[in-house]
Image 1 (tube, rainbow, N blue to C red):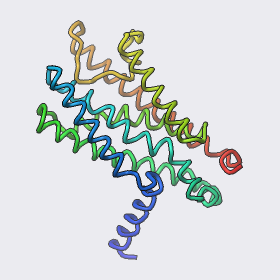
Image 2: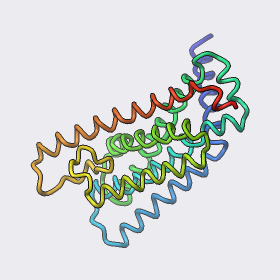
Image 3: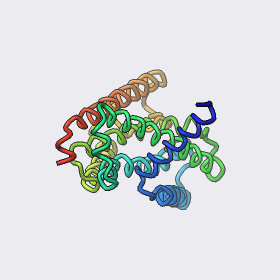
Length: 238
């Protein structure tokens, strides 16, 4: 097989998996995410919110989570609806490889979409760096995306997993806003572009680094737990 044939086969495999993950609804989620982003930008601008990197980061967080929640929460249910769960479980270790591959595709796609959103924000609001902004946004997106995937393997119902994921995000926002999380290292809603006024710059950089490391580690734990949850074949096929 030539390199071109390999690329074509890989592209077809990616397209097939993405159609199953989004069930043909991807364009709608893309449009809803874009509409939500424009609404948040318009609201912030009309309210006279100070334009900054931190403000743009905040406006992009919710659309990013919206883009990742549907495939993470409903992916397994969509496999069941398309009647391919039996096939996936029929080949040893195939289920894990398929879903690890799908999650990587989802995150790459969400990252590229966030780059586009950040570029629009650069044109319309504030001169941010789209690629670095999207990279910072992908840390909480991957954390909550992997958590949503874990919920889907535990609950096996897309709607229930989505509700639980949204409630988790709301709880995290509440804890961050009321400052119940005294140590910012553990604050999953931390905005890397909003440096507190009463903290030394070096201490803030170290706090932010520790926060990012913990979020990445937690995301990996959620991912591995979700993949391990797929071992219970009877739970999904029964």
